[in-house]
Image (tube, rainbow, N blue to C red):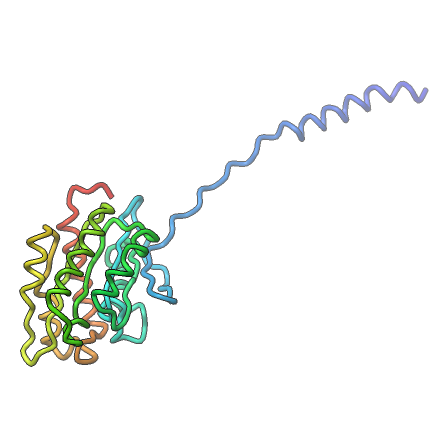
Length: 230
């Protein structure tokens, strides 16, 4: 009498086991895109608006003007404000008190690490403060442009005025821009440095000064990269 129930019971178990094995796996949701942000050494800004797909990576390379030496909050530096304005990833590679010779030595490794599409180069102010050779400054900036271009970067050059009684932009920046055919602005920092309300020191920018600089660079990026597939 017991044997009559063994076969049906085995069939039920087999059907249930088969149903577990054949369940289709649940589809995996894609990971969300990273938020746009600007970073500077040992600091990370909060997330801002989400970048477009395949948006360019921008390297802000320079000295204290890039680092944000005149502001306490790294979110007030020009690279952080540029990230917020554009939605692009902006790396703050500014080092306070750096000269062009030290920047030249540092640049290749930074480019290889971050692989940017665009580099905003703002160097030379500390060479002027230290009274270094103008010819050396020209050669160092020129070599930095060559290194960036060799890696396929679009170069945006920002001229830095000499810290004299009357703010004046050295001709060397225009000459470099003409020689290498890079996107160049030789006026924005002269205008900012001439307005005390935009500075926090002799050669340091406050939040509003950095904002104006970021706005100008954002405009240059839009104009200079038209037709680029980012």
